Length: 301
Length: 269
Image 1: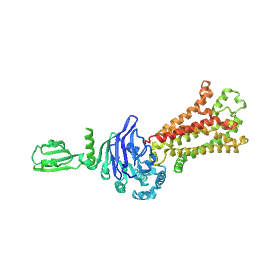
Image 2: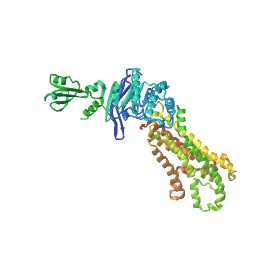
Image 3: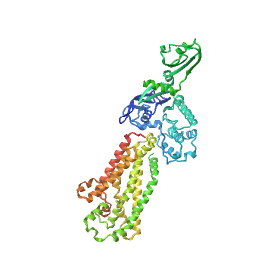
Image 4: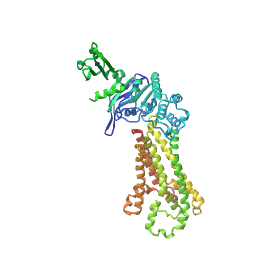
């Protein structure tokens, strides 16, 4: 199971729903033992890709395999190796939390050996578990969903928007848990549009838009390719040849207040101002969110 | 695994099942009780000298068995629209809940992403549905037997023969169930199951009814499901094997198709 093959391998994956193309030939290779982020705006195709991997949807074309097993031909064998959390946790409302967990545990080939520990971590008490699920808040339902996905201690976790509805404390608990899973050699594929969460947990990531992967790499790759902003205020009006620098994308402002948008390393820009009468200088550290927005705009243009 | 799925399906339907069972018990009791009032008291002996009126009764009873006999009267009770409605509510609602409603509610995502054969999930639902049919027909039969015991007019009618009345409905229920389960296996909304399965049943009922009363429609009567449903005839002449086997086989074929469809379909909540 942990041979040289990637944990997840997707090649030329296409999914159409009638005339709508949800996935347009994506390729994805997730190595063992890492936390892999799958990010993108709503409707980008993230959930569709995760559902294909979980055996819920059939691909229109292309192939997808988990631990070397084709997800379509060996659906149940693949499902034995994964813990799947759907984007919207919808359990049986008329049954109690405990009954839901018991049913989902019975349907898995592995025993729910981590159930008690996870229930404690996510603060799901016996009293809560005895209540009908329809009385649960969204966050409680989400926590129960996370427990049900992880209780068998599967080697691969596929989690669609796992922190939706969780309060900040529980989000922190979840991040800790994911870090532990990765340390234990598990592979985690999670989709999110909470980019700060991806920044905290993921080793690598793929960005999806319009059913295509438009970026794949590490956070450092994102940082190096993303737009940044340098603001310099001079005591006297000054003209500078910003646009001659290779990594400058845009220049705004006045002759005293220069706003320069650039990519990559700022050294060349700083060298230009080092001997000049600078009153103030700000190098804006764009949030991951801003970087991705910039990336999307760049790709779009 | 199967036992757990069966238990879950069985529990989910309990309120509906027991409510319908009470309704069918009372209907069975009521029919046995009213035989004296209508069958031997209210209706004149020469009623069926008018052949067009006889046709109307035949259309209602689903057979040419005289409605003034215990077999005819009780047989009529088992194809009475109220009895059929209670049974069809169960057949269609439980089949719709099997897959289509789970897809609509999104609960199927948790089940179908587990390493369990989707056909096993459906088989558990079909089994729960079949056990429900047994409970409902048993309730109806017990109502009829209670009526036979309590009301003198039917004292000569054997409870063993009365067993053929609910049994005569089984082939029809299997066929309607096949249609409903196949639709459920292929659908993502329960309303689609309701409209197709109820439409099939009601359309079939009225086609049979209309063809009994209006001769130009007679040639199309054999395509109606209800053309082959005749509880009175079963009670009078015994099991009608030919139509029963055809309906059961058709129903089972549809259930097999449902298994294939549920295994191959996309689960899209």
